[in-house]
Image (cartoon, rainbow, N blue to C red):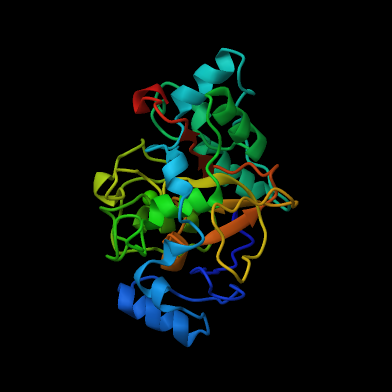
Amino acid sequence: MPFGHDDGSVHPPGGGPRTHAVEVGGMTKPELLDRLEHAGVRLNEAARTLFASGRFATAAARRRVDVVEVSVAKFKACSDHGDCKRGLVTNDWTGITPAEHAAYEPLCTLRDPVGMASHPINCVDWERADIYCTAHSGRLPTEAEWELAARGRDNRAYPWGNDNPSPTLLNGCGAECTAWAGKNAFELTAAYDGTDSWLGTAPGKTFPTGSTPEGIADLAGNVAEWVADSYAPYTAAAQTDPVVTNGDLKVVRGGSFITGKRAALATTYRTREKPTKRSSTIGFRCVSPPGTPVAGR
Ligand SMILES: [Ca+2]
């Protein structure tokens, strides 16, 4: 499995050690809050109304998280121009099996740079993602910036709100995905009944109803995303604009087209991976400097 380090943690500011495994999928906000408290996550009154009051207070004001994941066309243009490393069309992670290579390799989008030009680039390690964003006068979003973009100041369970994941809201693991997994002798669970019609990646913004109210697309599903931070357990105290730079693992956010657990599609969910990992389920987006036209990304 590409994701081997799910910790399922949740982290309202001031919430104490945030290592509780809490199933948050399919809950309304009040249900979610009750569940968090039941699990021992402390919530103060401010957190009940605005989780972002401490940890993510000012992150979004400084930089804007891009509305789409970086596409095959954009990435290829950067590498063709010599400003980025060449993309790759293979998967690599610790312990990857021949069967996983065979199943996931065809899903590397750079294999079809014309037909999949508007799909997110994937099969990229953290360094390639970092170089791309820097080459465009931007950078990878911090974990806090990513989460604020997805969760919003209204504390959404999912990027689109609090409705359960469905095949009209995202490219996650539907019937198309479980059928593919079965053929490859994997076990994957579906996030919803029915098919979302996309095995592997979908073009950016294919599911506009699943965007955030601010219009940021594909934060749940499609490809999961590298962020800037190294992985560290959350601090007990709320922080403003935290960035973790020390550590051997990088944080990945957002779930992907193989994600079936609703909790793993939630805006609070985080995984950690070796930065050298390349997976067809992982891509990235950047944050742009103020004034950068979206069309320029
Ligand atoms: Ca799908």
